[in-house]
Length: 356
Ligand SMILES: *Cc1c(COP(=O)(O)O)cnc(C)c1O
Image 1 (cartoon, helix red, strand yellow):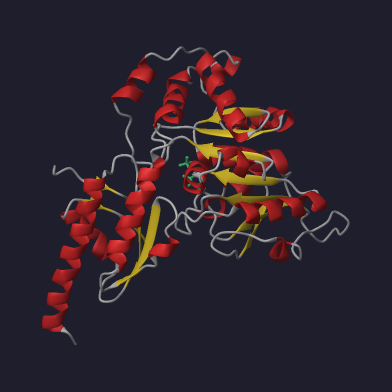
Image 2: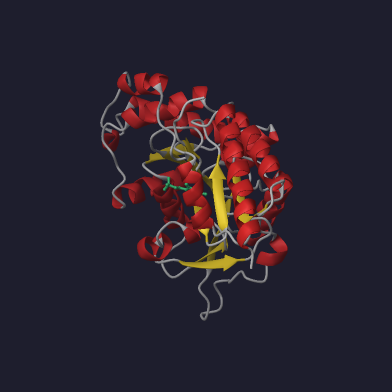
């Protein structure tokens, strides 16, 4: 059963295995700023085709890809509607303001999803000079901070239909759109059709060392190409990275189902333990977020689990996140479950002795 650490802090901790490293080593490359790198171009057109979009553009990170999408759709002084727990607002260092001069208007959603009913009162038209005009709606699927929740297809469609009436584009932060597609058993393009631009990550569950692809119309991607350069994301022999992305699409897409199964099994086992507040029915993909109850705090539990070789992330004083990924086997999942049982049994004994 190995003594290696079981790293559940994120699905970004995945490391390229032998096959991926071979693909990287053998990649045919060129200067991508001259648009000369055949491997980058192959990855871009492959992802665009999968998503049903005209063109794709390779980015070093999902943050930069989302930043470019905002710059594509919204000019300085305009407003973007987004869900309050979204990654763009919470975890991307304020690029909408800093790089695009855009103000984010955050809106309370339901399990990460936004509805036309909520948004329609918030749209600012151009005809009133008091308001920052609304230029874009962003959505996230699966939803990271809401525990990997899937935005259902019907919800996406309803929002999309409404935005057509309002003449507002939608940008989909699909860092884990692959997970939604695999969990729903539908092609990723079925989800992507309800957004104008879509950013997908290769460096999360797919296991590539870096890279995201932004897809959209030819005109959007032409604008994004300039923004990528301006943001410092135009790379030269980037085929080295794109090769890993192509390899990931060939080998690591279908196996996301195993991450979902491990996450579910872990959630069911841990939810049954005292001191953990978790509804396993809400675990739909590879992310499990749960609340720890007193006397525990999340950082303390994180530290104790670390002693068992289980790494998780305390994301709030009372919240822990575990993200199942391709470095975590079914046996590793058992080890994580066993560690929880041991930790919480020990806690029970300790607090039984010194309860006050
Ligand atoms: C990881 C992630 C991103 C992009 O992150 P990078 O680390 O910049 O690649 C964007 N959106 C969501 C929802 C994510 O989880």
